[in-house]
Image 1 (cartoon, rainbow, N blue to C red):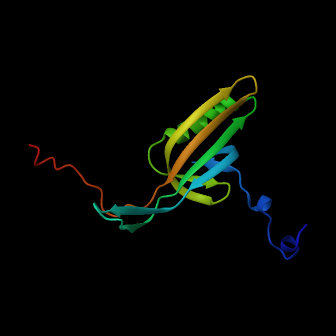
Image 2 (image 1 turned 30 degrees about the vertical axis):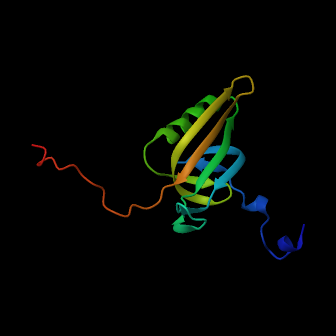
Image 3 (image 1 turned 45 degrees about the horizontal axis):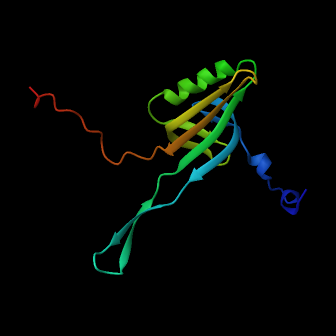
Length: 143
């Protein structure tokens, strides 16, 4: 026990959550998060001068190495696959960052039937906010 926990604070283990996406739980092995800013570098011909234009924060990207295991790992796998392949944004319970609104970017799946485990490498991106109304096709103009 350390001074932090003696003063009533939580340890990282107490703050850690099991992961889930659209309500389908999974265990995690490793996590990584890509963060940063969107910068445009302007370089000029015949000049040693460059300028950088800050365009704001990048959308966060979360890579989760997740797994499901047990005698029913195939059923758990299928539930997670269905959640991952559903269109639109969903709720990710990230073990470190809590609730995040995300979209699925990519997913790689590996199954080991002998060990009764399915591994997922899932890449999520922040869902963001829609800044303008969605466009609609003008069916009258197409006639």
